Length: 109
Image 1 (cartoon, helix red, strand yellow):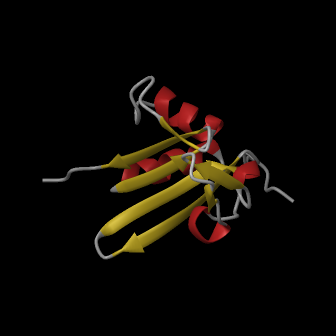
Image 2 (tube, helix red, strand yellow):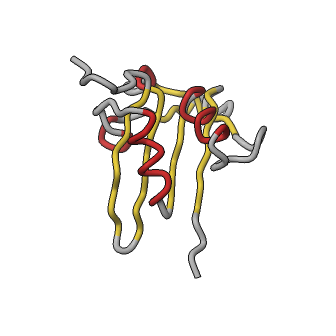
């Protein structure tokens, strides 16, 4: 069951690594999928260990992105939201197994 006000389309996990606030978020249906990497036949699994399994609202995801020093975003909806909110330049996403993917690094000085 999804809590009221929660968008079932996003899952997110926050990782704290030393001084880094790492936000990993993806479109919910990608968790558990294996995505091809290149043409070598290798794949990468989209895991709940990294991306989480807790569904979050748009507002919660944006709150986390505002504080992130690193973000790893995977999926059409999550990268579109980041683009709409100015975290990613239009057209600046790459692809992982045909799925939009972006990594954001904040350079704090």
